[in-house]
Amino acid sequence: MENLFATRLSDLLKETGLSKRNLAKLIGISAASVADWSNGKVQPTAENIYLTAKFFKVSSDYLLGLEDETGAKKY
Image 1: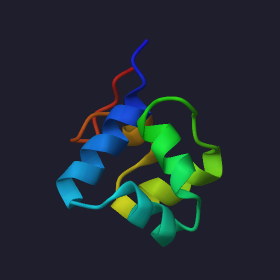
Image 2 (image 1 turned 90 degrees about the vertical axis):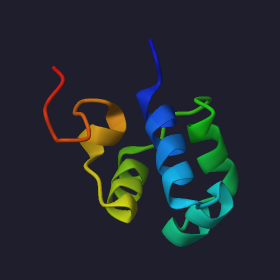
Image 3 (image 1 turned 90 degrees about the horizontal axis):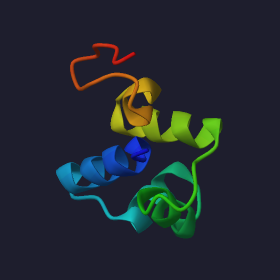
Image 4 (image 1 turned 180 degrees about the vertical axis):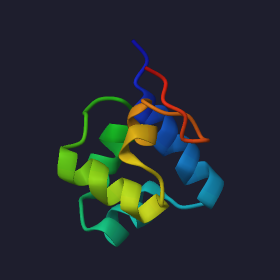
């Protein structure tokens, strides 16, 4: 199964030109955590999904792959 959180996080970082280290600093977590999420090694906690979604102004469902870019549900 594809890790859509890792894919979507990597895409958002590329689109915004933000580094993993800068995202980590801005949302108050370690750079290693963001690196692990974007590499698919570790799944973020619910709180960190919330912080990431809030930062990028997307839904947590989008980050988790439960909806597409338009907000249409995929389940």
